[in-house]
Amino acid sequence: MLAQSKQTVSRSPRDEDKRPQHIAVIMDGNGRWARQRGLPRVAGHRRGVEAVKKMVGDCGERNIPYLTLFAFSSENWNRPSTEVKLLIELLYSTLENELLKMHEHAIRLRVIGDLGRFPKRLQKKIADAEALTKDNTALNVTIAINYGGRWDMTQACQSIAKEVERGTVQADAVDAELIENHLATSDLPEPDLFIRTGGEKRISNFLLWQLAYTELFFTDVYWPDFDGDCLDQALDYFAGRERRFGQTSEQVTGVA
Image (cartoon, rainbow, N blue to C red; front, side, top):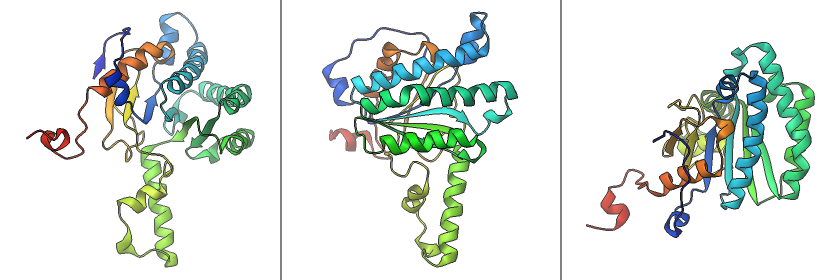
C-alpha cells in the first residue's frame, strides 16, 4: 500500500472493531524533511522526536496497546560520526525529559537491541527507564536501537545452542516456538500492522521473523509530518485487509 499524500479520513465503527493490537514503525525521512526546508539534518531528527511523542499519544487515544519504533538500526553506525553522536544524545535527552511523563500516563517503555556499543550512561538511563515503568499497562512502547532482524535471530540461535550444549534443551526440541521465546520481542505479540514512512518500500532488516504475517503499509509522508490523520489512514487500510494466515477466504469468512 502506498499512500501518496496525507489525507483526512473518517473512521467507521466497523474499522474500530478491526483495530491492530501491535503496530511496528520504521520512522524514515527526517533528513529529507530537513533538507527540503534548507535545515540541517539535526532539525529533522529533533522534529522526528516530536512525531514520536505524537504517535505515542495517538496510539493511546486509539486504544492500541503495543507500539514498536525502529529508532536506530545496526546499519546506522555507518552514518557520519557526528550524526551518530547526535542521535545518541537525542535519545538520552528524550529519555531524560519524557520518562516521568510516560510513567504518569502508565506507559511501559522497553528497549531492544545490542546495547553494549552505547555509552554507559545511556545504558543506565535505559535500565532505569525500564525498571520505573515495568508495571505500567496503558501502552507498551518498545524502542529498537542498534537492532537488526538478523542480529535478533542470530542471538536467539546462539542462546539456544548454549542450552543444547548444557543439555537443558534437546536439539530435536528446537522449533519455531522455542526460537520465538529467545527473540528480543519474546514477551510481545507479533505486529499486526507495519508502517514505513518516507517513501521507501522495504523492511530494512527490521523484525524479520516477527513480520511474517504482518500487513505492510508504506507512505510517502516523511516521519516528522506523520500525524493522527496519517495513522488513521493506515488503520483504515488495515481494517480493509482480510487476514487469512494461510487459510482460504471462505474459511475466514465462513462463506462457502
